[in-house]
Length: 456
Image (cartoon, rainbow, N blue to C red; front, side, top):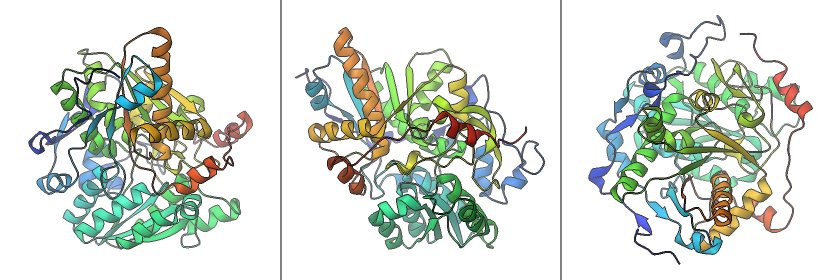
């Protein structure tokens, strides 16, 4: 076994918790393209966005020059219930792989929601409460975001309405019940409750749904109820901003022990956890202070970065949200019902899309059977059952460590372990029973999804 000069788990002191969120856009030479109003095709105004989102969140969304935003004290107080989160040296995994690589992971599953999503959920719920709203609506894929938001809303006394992607609603009943325990209403999407849901069901009978569908329903629900706003768990720059507590803590912990990662890896669906982890490190790269390899890992069944187009597209299937320039498979693309529900989004964050297009980040797609094989290997030696989404990062971290074994290079690998998989046992059962398959969309299927892109 490697010489354990670094602790298994590096915990920061409470006083070392970040007091500000970092806005990586401030250091980007090429800023992400602006959101466009779907009605006019022109950059959307704060007034228009405020009809859907909380006012303070709109300010954060549109600000691409302010490098740091102070974290309000009530949010910091909430963070202290589960933060700082541990940075873990994966000594046992290193020994199992017999690799000279040093492997670290930032573990975000040490809270009741089981994932990193709580970092932004409490922030968005706080701003909704400060605005005097009655409640919020949202979508959820795997259920982690819905769980986190229901917790935050219960804490602050807000109503929470969740539209959960139908395949996850059916596969993950216990995740659904956690949300209900915290007082949220949970509706499988697409549903008959909204006009958009009914339209999608008419056009796609028997569909298992998608995040794009659920977003459309949640936005409609917010805009048709007085005193409600819509909140989103990924994709938007405000969400990436809140999630930078992950990367800021990680960098502080690594700096404390003189550790510099060579490769930083994160799973990528909409981009919140990956953006949150890499932002402080990417800032150093953008400023010319250090260099790193960044790898975004996405499912082969929903490969927006590796097979999508970098164009303006609708953020939702119902085409009511603003247009964003991003790597996309088309807002009408509905991926297969894979077990990584949190990664089944047709597009990628505008921030990460711009960084990827500028060649500052790599992307890789992996098949779900290989992902679950990596999850199983990790669980058996590291003692944590990882979420299917997180396991995409584990897969590539293991692959990179094995490359080091072949070459003899002693690289330092960092990946984000975004959450636990204890509500994903249906998926693990399928894998253990040998019933899990891989689905890769054909070129024709992707072409159909891209056929109706907006003309911008």
